[in-house]
Every structure is written in structure tokens, then in C-alpha cells.
Length: 197
Image: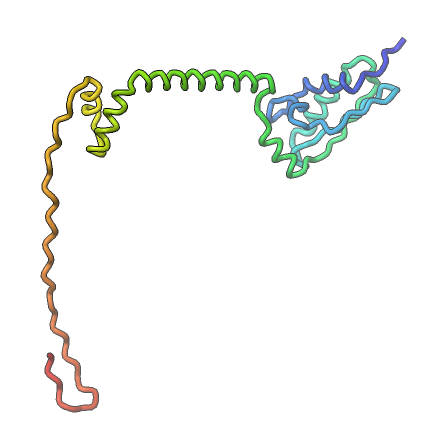
């Protein structure tokens, strides 16, 4: 007795083992499986989205889909139909996560743990050094800037020495303008030449 045809779920599970040759991720995760149909005689039709019409790896994808689905019990024939993604689908593909949902959850949980630990530690450091924080703030209000040595001195509980008062910058000397005599102009209508002023 022959095997019954596979279910759509079984075909989809088999397709999860087919990776996009360029992105190296399952075509099911990338949203490249457009449709799956299983006929009573065991014929399976799989519609696949390609990112571009002239995809150079279309034959590889076709071959891999044929092999994965054809290996299922109850499959008598595999038909692969290739279609092309719209611009919107390509944009969505580019923004899709580069990891599985489970991996993304683990990463999110670890990032959250690190942030919470850092926040707790920062709060503890501030509370333990609140007096120094106020001392440094007061010194900054007085001086506007502090050197590393000055901060270290405040941390040791030392008083900062008064800063030397530098004289105000002198105003630059004004340059004496140089006057150039105007060239004489010939009279316009042949009268006597006018002496320069």
C-alpha cells in the first residue's frame, strides 16, 4: 500500500531545511515560500518568491526545493513555481531579523540583564560617593573645569589651591592707517588740471 500524500505542514517543515544560497538562512524564515499545495495523488506544488527576476541562483533554489520535498513519503511529483518579490517585500526582507526568534529572545534577555546590573552598580557607586559628587559639583561651579589631578585631590579629601589669576589679555594695538595720495585726473573738458586735494 502506498503512503498517503504529505500534509502542508510536513512540506513546510521540509522546506525549512532549504537555505537561501546567498543569505544562508531557511527560505521559510525569509518569507520566500509563497504557497504550498498538496494534491490527492501526491503532487506537491511549491511557489517560491525570488528577490529579483534575474536571480542567478534560481536553479539552485529550484533543485534544493525539489530534493527536500521529493524526499517526503507520499510525494509523487514536485512542481516549483518561481515568482518575484515586490519592492515592499524586498524592503521587509532587508529589515527582517538575522537570527531566529528564540536566539533573539535570548539576546534580548541577556542585554536586559546587563543593563539592569549596570544600573544597579551605577546607583550604588553614586550613593557611596554622594559627598564626593557634591564636592566635585561645587568645585565645577567655582572653576568651570577640573583637571584629573584636581579630581583625584578632591577624592582624597584635600582642598584645592586657589588658581593663579591671569592678567586680562591686552587689547591689540591699533594699526595706523597708511594714506596713499590719489592719482591726479586729467580735466574732462580741456580746462586747467586740478591740483590734488
